Image (cartoon, rainbow, N blue to C red; front, side, top):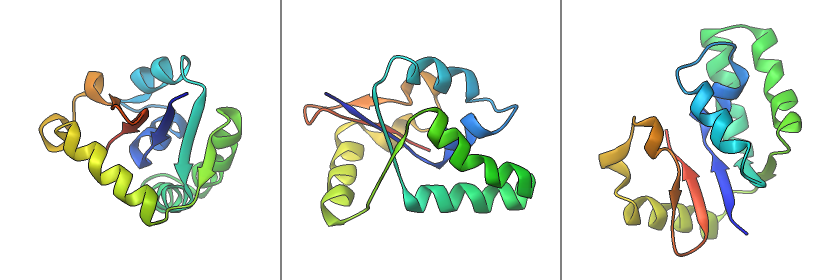
Length: 115
């Protein structure tokens, strides 16, 4: 089974009422079973929302994580190295910013939703 890692932009798209990534993220995630993110991403989302939106939106992050059944994983050296390899395998820098290319599959059966 494939894990889908949701980065800050993906979580923010789910939390915000209006976001240019909201529709493609929601559409894709409806067909995925194993959604994951990290505690660091949760904190980053809260900080962004405190700065750009409101305290109320910052508190919605955990509600969205529960609603979508997103598992919070620990970032250790193994996870960071796997992430680095996935980004290199999928020419990460060349595809940033294109919603249809948000999700990358690799032989390692991992998926990344990049910023």
